[in-house]
Amino acid sequence: MPEGHTLHRLARTLNRAFTGTSPQASSPQGRFTEGAAELDGAAYGEAYAHGKHLFVAFADDRWLHVHLGLIGKLTVGTVRPPYGAVRLRLATDETAGDLRGPIVCALRTGDEIAAQIAQLGPDPLRADADPDLAWARIHRSRRSIAALLMDQEILSGVGNVYRAEALFRARVDPFRPGTDLGRDTWDALWTDLVELMPLGVSTGRIDTLEPEDLEAHQSANPGRRRGRVYAYRRTGRPCYVCGSPIRTQVVDGRNLFWCAECQPGRRAH
DNA sequence: AACTAATGTGTAG
DNA sequence: TACACCTTAGTTA
Image 1 (spheres, rainbow, N blue to C red):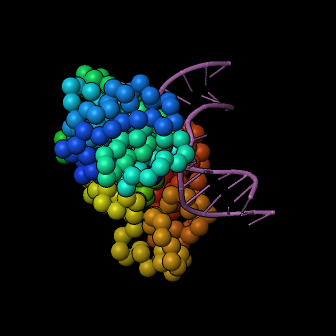
Image 2 (image 1 turned 90 degrees about the vertical axis):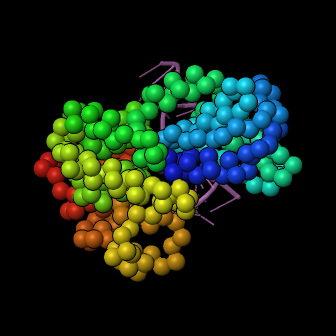
């Protein structure tokens, strides 16, 4: 589930597995052979996430830049023969990290990493994040808050699930323009993301239901294991708060999910 | 077993 | 707007 929480979790997992080692690097798939050769045997430094980007520092200003995109996976576990298309394997005698299907897997310098980070808006999962930087752009934009929340240059790490859930939890109409949002509403959205996303880092999944709404969820979904959410992918099913059907609409090529009763707006959708 | 959609983003037409 | 990435969960047969 590659929204920001996934990448922060992976940075932690990589650091636990590889800190203090000099892993072997290879590209079983063959599409990162040269980069892997550059990293092979280099001393591992530290992994960091910023939004949905993952950066791994190695000795001598060699950095690995990974973006999983929609279907990419990075798994870390005991050494086994690779399956599927493994773009990059980092391996010690005990542990292998296998990267499949990323949209970015590249060797970078520290300067290049800094330039990449400079393009990203504040990340609710980072202690150094400044929400005012996002607000400065949001309150001057006529784009919808739904579009703004997904724009990684405005804030980073929020994807389609956290977008739908944060807007629901703050009871905000997704189509409201940034110019119309109000500072209080932005503060509520940001504060909620700052509380919500670390839960995703610890659990590896996105759960957003408040305790008082959990009962309605559990009676409607006995034994469900995946994330417990208010709106995301619940099209046509009853809202856990008001019972009216969750709505969906494609906006900028992505499905947007919301409850028109709990998140009322002035315009017809 | 086969098929589809998906948490994302860059590029080409 | 379409495609590429090429995995995986979920659905349909």
